[in-house]
Image (cartoon, rainbow, N blue to C red; front, side, top):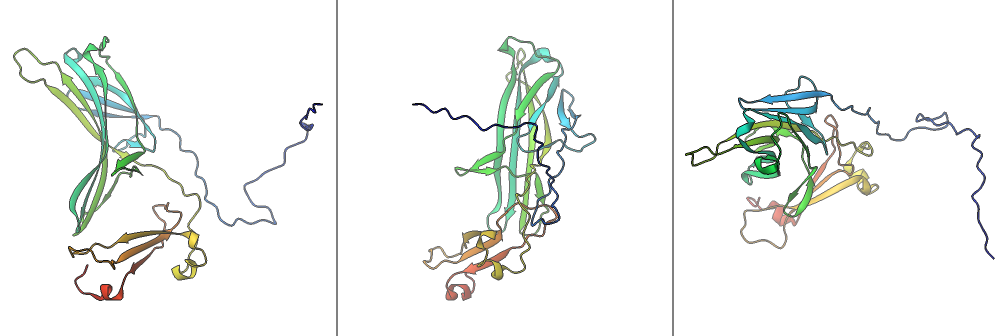
Length: 280
């Protein structure tokens, strides 16, 4: 015997219940992260010219100093080349680099992006158009020592006596020319322009008002994010009782430019190691 189960009857004439984001008289808002209005895609263009190459970028604000792109943005536009009959290939490169200077490591540089794509070749069977279109997806992450990290925004900290950091991004168009008769090397022209990377991240909730660290780390430990880092010393032989630095910040870990970020720093280790002069 087979029983056929039918769905319950639904009366489409029944009106839907009303809904409002504002609390009613017997409700109150505990915490909220207000959502900003959806940012419309800009309709302007950005033009960069050199004597032999012109680069036009789409979806840009009018009268901006540099092009601006967000997370997972599409770098799109077109390229115009003077005298296209003598062009062998057109290559687009997208580069990103983080440069820093610290008292501990000195100056060092970390590559963030190094993307290259051939937009046109002479042997492709098609003529180089007057306006060569391109569209390149901007990665949102980079790889460092085998681990994946979010791509940092364009940023610059003014240089001080012991610390400086700068993140910059650029795109470069390389036009390789056909080698002329009697010439040993092929000529090439290039146009390089910087752009700003501004990923927009909104926290899933605001920072909770935390009056004191010690009164909340035990009652609400989930509200804190802890990072433990061993402290390097000038001693060549590693000691078994090393010192560790504990950094505590709010668990949300996403902050606005004007937010006041509470934090707590704690040094943990044997007392004799902490009191030893000249150890750090």
